[in-house]
Structure formats: structure tokens, C-alpha cells
Image 1 (cartoon, rainbow, N blue to C red):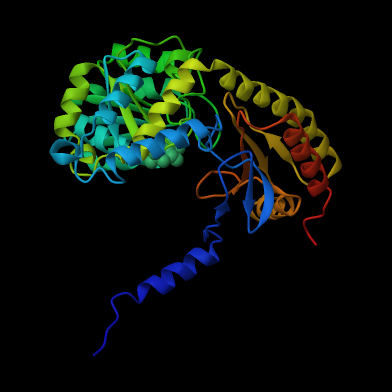
Image 2 (image 1 turned 90 degrees about the vertical axis):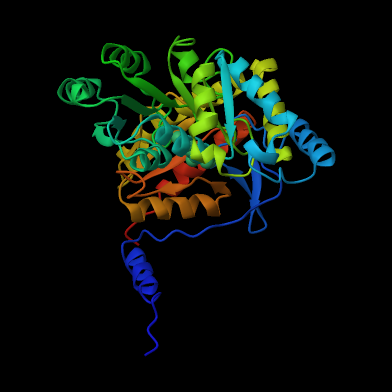
Length: 402
Ligand code: PMP
């Protein structure tokens, strides 16, 4: 008998296709920026996490080149064995200085930082309370930890308090998990309320600052700074791959926390250290975040301008076309236009692409409702934003039932 133990893969893929959940990839050509190329065509980029436009910045590129010349391409080992370079320590000091924490630890990705930190902080005897919209890396870290995991409704601090009252006492340690900027909606967690509950119920609070670092707060330190919670007992996790334009992740907090994670976080211990090029690029980016607040100001000016245009436009288009279009509440550079069904949002994405605009259509099961998810960059120009609103108006005039 020649049984094929992989035969089920074909039918699993067929099921994914039937549900309209199949995902394919497309290559972005040329250097990262507000305008990129896809399949040889220039397109306006509203789908990048490069909020400050640093991934294509000459200063980061030069830093990466110099580090590669000095150290080579790979870090060649785990940090605790042979992968540590002086650059890693410099980056950790720079992150701790940006966040105003005692220390920081750099991981090879933000995903690993969350997996490693959550699973090191709690175990079987413990309780995790997690916002239902949290990023996959927090959810998977929670599963990996073996702790009891309870989800609370998105940003619902009343429900969170009830869950704490009901369950906290029966567990040894308790960890509250939240994104600070929710990546598929662009809204913010209610940080001061979460912190107050954490203090009342003797719980740890972990905040994922992936989309906030470099973006929110007067100095770009993130949501913690934005809410005036700098210096409080919070475990801050984040990525080097969004506003910082590189690759990698970090945890920032007390020196004791970082010392413990260095010894206990499997996602730090058993993986190769971040490459010299990525480390140096991130270090250059943190310096720019600290020294060039105008870049952040430009990003927020762009957010305000596009929001002001989209608010009335979405209402007008809902009234004049067959399709309801709603700008979801956001306090970040992530602006989402909720648009009818998955088929309609895909069609709209295609029409925008034909008009030279890359605006990703995000559908269930990734999000509860279909939407165009726009991300703004400091390097978008006024004319780019106008080009987007014009193209959206024109695309919305097309009937979907054709
Ligand atoms: N947390 C959030 C909220 C994210 O959006 C992401 C990336 N999509 C991550 C963590 C993971 O970061 P990285 O890409 O560095 O693995």
C-alpha cells in the first residue's frame, strides 16, 4: 500500500479556497517608501507599517552596511553562547532610554518577544486575562504558557473587573495582556484603567507597543507615554519592524524583569541573535525617533488630513452609492474603512490597485468585518492623500452587482 500521509493537505486547501480565505502573496519592488512598485507599476503605498518612512532611509541603510562590514552577515549563535555583539547592548540601552525603563532585551522578532515573555511570566497555576482583539503572538504566548486564559470583550474594563473578582484569588499569578494600538482597528487600549485594575488585583500588565513605538507619545516612546504612564510597573513589548524600519522585537521594563527573561524566555535563549545589520538599523532608527520629532509630527499631520477628508466622504459615498462605508474610530495612523461584504472589499481593493493605489482589503476571519486598512506614513505627501480620496470616490461609483 502506498498511503500518502500528506493527502489531507489538498482538501484542507480546497476548504480554505471555498471559504474565500485563501491568501496569496505579492512582491513589493524597489526601496520601501510612500511610492513603491508592484508588478512593474508604481503604486501609492497605504499598506506599510513603516510609519516614519525609515525602512528606506539612507541613515538606516548606511548603519546596516557598516555593521555588516564590521561583523559579517549573521550573528552566528544564540545571544547567550556566541551571538552577542556590542551592538545588541547599545540597542538595548537605546530602547531603555527611549522608554525610560531600567533595562530592555532585544529578541529576533516581536512575535518571539511576545511568545517568550508571556510564557516565561506565567504557568499552569496562573491566570491570563486577554483582550479579545489582541495580536496572535500574545494569544499564542498565552496558550504556550499553560495558564488559564480568559478573554474579555474588546477594551471592556467592566467585564475585566468582573473576571478579576471572580477568578483572581484562585490563581497564583495573574497577567493582563493587551495591544496598545489594536492593529486591525487602530484604536487604543484603555491603559490607565487597565493599570488601575492591575494594581488593585495584584496582577502584572503586559502591553504590546508594536504599532505605538516611534508613533505615539511626545518623544515617540509609545502609548505608555501617551497616557502619562511612564515609569509605572508595566511590561512593555514591541517590535523593531514597524516605525523603527528594521527587524526584531524587544521587551522593556525593570532590570529584574529583564534579567529574569534573559534566563528564562525560551524565545530569547534558543534562537540566533538578531543580525548585525538589523540591530544597527534599529539603533539608528531609535536615535532618529529621539532626535527628529518633526518626522512624527508630519505623520500625525497626515493622519489628521486624511481623517478629515474621509469622514465626510464616507458619509457622502454611503448616501450616493449602493454600499455603506464607515470610517472606524481610530487614534493612530491605522485608518479602517469598513465596507460591506468580503467580496465588495476585495473588489474595491482591486479597483484602487488599477488606479495605482495599494490599500489592503482585510476580511474575516482576520477581522470581524471586512475593511480597507490604510496605514499612513510620515513620507506621504499631501498630493498622495488627495489621490487616494479621488480614487476611492471613483471606485465607489462602480456597481458591485455587475
Ligand atoms: N504585535 C503586534 C500588535 C503586531 O502587529 C505584530 C506584527 N504584525 C507583532 C506583534 C509581531 O511583530 P514582528 O513582526 O516583529 O514579529
